[in-house]
Amino acid sequence: MGSVRRALLEDAAAIAAVHLAAWKTTYPGILPESFLAAQSLDERIVTWRERLANPGPKSSVFVACSRDGDVIGFAWGGPSRRPEAGCEGELFSIYLLKEAQGQGIGALLLKSVAKSLIENELRSMAVWVFAVNPARHFYEALGARPVTEKKFDWGGELLTEIAYVWPDLTAL
Image 1 (cartoon, rainbow, N blue to C red):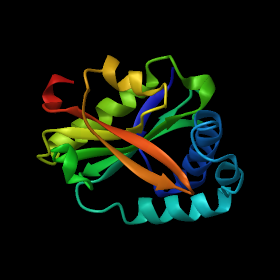
Image 2 (cartoon, one colour; image 1 turned 30 degrees about the vertical axis):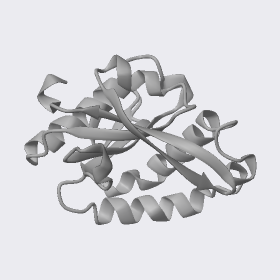
Image 3 (cartoon, rainbow, N blue to C red; image 1 turned 45 degrees about the vertical axis):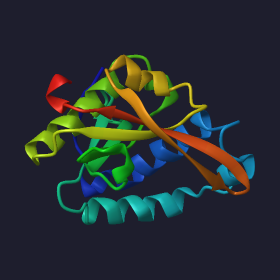
Image 4 (cartoon, one colour; image 1 turned 60 degrees about the vertical axis):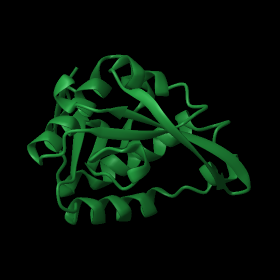
């Protein structure tokens, strides 16, 4: 399976590549095709370099690596940015390459973020997921429960996000 570790600045390009690949396999039919086609690897590399260089207080990024050491997934979390879920912490994003899914790697990444949040005295965590994303059942399987939803406009399309919550991260 490989390993999970804290991300390094040198991982920015690999994280960006996984991020872009995962969006293109996860979001067709969910996000506008024109938006997905316009995504740029170079722009994501810049974003991830900045994010890793300046992670913010109590935030962390973890990568999952294959046995060969290639980055095949990542998770990023920190203090909640959206108080309406009622949690101290938030899983901002978690993505795996399609071929790495279904092997328990996502659970390891999520639990790494949860452990980091606990170490930073953040005891609960939310994640916001598109309501039509079938991957949301991953969070349910790990004990999260839906608590609220929010509609928003994304390029002229009305989308719904659901907040899944772990009220006590020590249960993970």
